Amino acid sequence: MSGADSLKRMTVLITAGYVLALGLLAGLTIGIHVLLNQAVTELQHAGKVVNVAGAQRMLSQRIYWLTEELAHGTGDLEALESAINRFETSHRSLIYGDLAAGLPPGVSEDLRVYYFEEPHDLDVKVRHYIELARSGLVLGVDSTLVEDMRPMAAADLLESLDAAVQAYENQVSANVSQLQDVQSLSVAAVIIVLTLEAVFIFRPLVGRVRRYAGQLYDLATRDAMTGLLNRRSFMEFANRSERERRRNPFPISMVMFDIDHFKAVNDTYGHATGDEVIVRTASLAEEIGRDADLTARIGGEEFVVLLPHTDLDGARIMAERLRSRIEADMVDAPSGSSTDSIRWTVSLGAVELQDNESIEAGLVRADGLLYEAKNGGRNQVRAA
Image 1 (cartoon, helix red, strand yellow):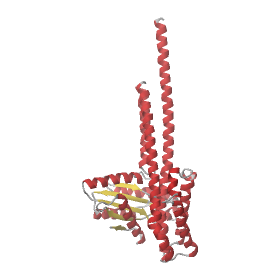
Image 2 (cartoon, one colour; image 1 turned 120 degrees about the horizontal axis):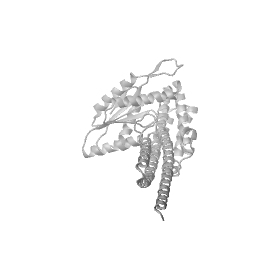
Image 3 (cartoon, one colour; image 1 turned 180 degrees about the vertical axis):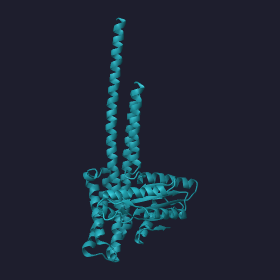
Image 4 (tube, one colour; image 1 turned 120 degrees about the vertical axis):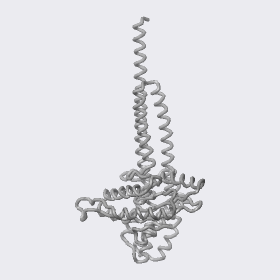
């Protein structure tokens, strides 16, 4: 074989190898792109499911609170009916799906045990709770109905709702972990192929994978609307701080707050303006907080701030600063409104973690104080 023939054959082999490597790169790139896009979509759906499931807990408490107010002759019957309808609609959507709302079609097999099997049997509990609440709309609310609803609102139904939310969050965590494993294998395959190729193919592909990984991390840890930590990530970081406190004692406090009369904002000015109020509230909370504080959106209009190295007095001061700052703020009203700007307030509950008290227990206490602030007239801080 002549030198020219050998060179030609080598050129053909190199070209064939190069084209084959490019084909493998193209196939891997397309596969990773499809996989990550699918993962982003699934995590978006999962995030919406977690938000809806978390909102169910607040709605159950709101229904009880409104029923109790009506029993004392100070409640709002329309508000109670609206809360019941939202509670019932969200429950159906979680079980059977709601594609228009971005919820997957039906509850997964792993979660069916929470809805249809003992000890939680959440579907039966929710239906019974709704039936009790609706009986008040038809027959009138009295102290007997409040007493019938109290055990479910205080413990039975609430614990099952919390268990379901935790199951949803665990499922999201498992999906993220699985996707991270798949991603790691894909990246390893890409690196092996890229090692055999030129640097100008390797760098762009790694950059793309890194960007997708960042998107996955943000979707898994951040609230899409406000950019704050979501409930799952907040609990992870907060529990880490609590463990550090056990090793080296220091005070930890929490402030939980939510927007007063938020439904009225949505109903009067539209959901776009309501979203703007939520985003502005989140921004003000981060402005008031320190770098070491953790601020999270844990429900529709409910937020929490973790304050490491802060006692109850410090938490109360921070909460009051946030309350007054929000009270003084405003956003522009949509065109055609009867007013140029919109003002709103928040109710806040502040607690300092006691010795050996968990983050979850502290959140329960803060939530109770928040509702004390609501019941006390709103736009105020309750601390204990």
